[in-house]
Length: 364
Ligand SMILES: *Cc1c(COP(=O)(O)O)cnc(C)c1O
Image 1 (cartoon, rainbow, N blue to C red):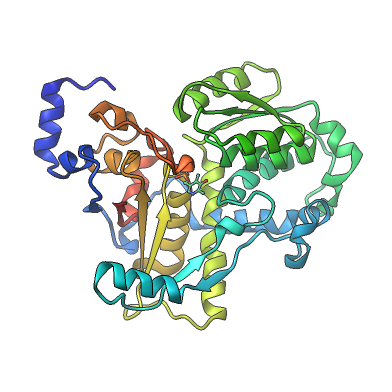
Image 2: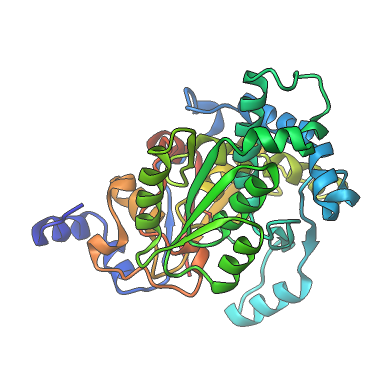
């Protein structure tokens, strides 16, 4: 959106933190709209949707196990370890000259099998669910059949009649590209300029069409969306709008609950859980936070962490302008080494309703 100097000055007056954001200072913002879970109603997605998403993952587990041998140990469930981070905790205490209360753990989504990032959750889920919908609709499988069918030549032949497109800074493209190509879809990834070269090469090796883009993430998404939707059987995975990505991510909360129980870690009034989530457009941390609030109620405090050069979600939440405002509108450059987080605008997905379940966030 175009802001006049006057409007910008007004925003700064209303939100004193804004000047610090513009100065690229690390800041903490606590969401004043956070609600108690019992006051939360009429959300555009429900906990029932999260549980159904987990069931979808379970149905596809035999398929994933058969096509991605690295998931065999986990019976086709794509999940990462939860590990104590004792040394990191000590280092942080030294760095900040204060004790860190409680215990620090790392949820190792960087090691998620096959796609190697949190995008394995949302991206794989959306494509699997789309494939399932197509196959059921065409009567090629029944709801009770084994999903190993998806690995058959018949399935690949069927999906080759459909195209999937996605705009990405890298990781979403990797996950959508890998799973779509494996299923047999014709898949095109629109990569923004900041995407790493190795990610593009890996995708091309897997038969994915990679369109390189001079602009940033939002431009890659806009062009990708137009080109894909112009195709006859085109389906666009829309990182700025998608409900399915959101639900795919949210399942992480159910898995984390299990892992905490297995490790005898309690979460209750006396033992609140703080979860620090790296944030780009806000879909992954939003989906995970949504699941977490339903699993742990008011005892969990999701904190979104964005690069100081790309504080898109903070800007949208704090000003109330949601996905309308971009970091460049206030003069922030959106250039960061954290390529997966270089997003200038926040996700659009029913933003206003969902912000009430979030806690807040800090920049670093
Ligand atoms: C995409 C991504 C995120 C953030 O997800 P958004 O939905 O863009 O907020 C965080 N970490 C990594 C590694 C990612 O690839």
